Image: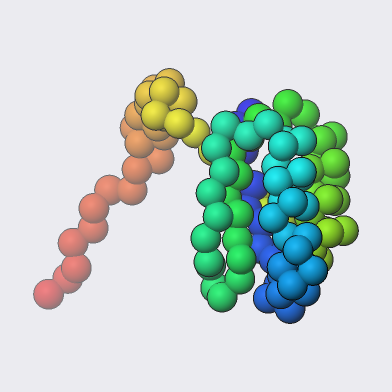
Amino acid sequence: MRCLLKVSIPVETGNVAISEGNLPKTIESIVADLKPEASYFAEENGKRTGFIFFDLKDTSQIPAVAEPWFLAFDAQVEFHPAMNLDDLKKALPGIERAVKNYRRTARTKAA
């Protein structure tokens, strides 16, 4: 299953790692192990944050994916199932079924 891994590194921990020269090589090593489809790095909420798209073959992999970030950076880690455009197209019948079965009818406000 394609998954978005969001990793937020606390500022203090990141500052120490970058001052010691460890931040880039540690991130590179962790990311290389994941063999991601794509990885991006930016600031979010004042923290160094990575957005990494990879294939989570089984939920039993979650600890192996998360632990390096916890151990190296005291990072906050989030997993989110993600779709590409082809996946979204395949999902259309399910979306249409949900709309048909569960869409709330519009209600007009009484004047």
